[in-house]
Amino acid sequence: MTKPTRVTNSIREFRTSAGLTQIELAARIGVTRQTLIAIEKGKYSPSLEMAFQISRVLDTPLDHLFHYPDE
Amino acid sequence: MGYAERNTWAQVITSIIAAAVYAAVLVRRLRIQATHEVQWVQPMLWTIGATIVAAILLSIGIGIVAGMINSDTEHRADLRDLEIDRFGNRIGQAFLLAGSLGALILAMVRADWFWIGNTLFAGLFLFAVVGGIARLIAYRRGFQ
Image (tube, rainbow over all chains, first blue to last red; front, side, top):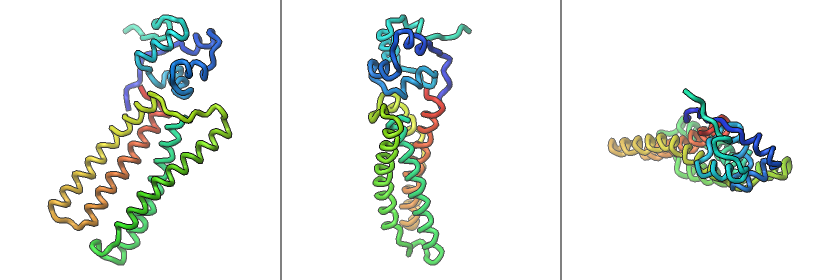
């Protein structure tokens, strides 16, 4: 199994603020609802391209959506 | 549960059941016959064919039930499914390779065809089952 990621995200918060459901956001970035759920729960790290798509749909900078802890 | 995960469950379940039935048939025959006399080709072909058909039917069945429970159930795979599929194949390939090498060695030492055929079959079975279980773990526990 791959190493757990230290990247966390606030997609859920920004998605609900934008008034989007999981199904709507998933459709707009071209993934299934299960994949969006996995991303929001930190169980799947999206590709850089997918991260940019999420950022664009939610109109939120990447570093507001994704966080990486300081050493 | 997504489309690709449902298919993986169907594949793993049917592979395990089919291999158990095949093994039971062979063990019964081996009790009364020597390996070179045992008819294994027909049961193996039936096992492979039945596994493919059963996996398709089971996947359709699970899909229908999932659709009845949740009308938003999707019937497509995406990038994550593709990545998890590749991950499962990478894990399973080790067993496929071990089965192939085992069969090659058995052929070199002129072992009975029974052992060569069944070693290859075991490699294929482990490729499907271990790779499938790795995919299911990735779906359930997360995939980075």
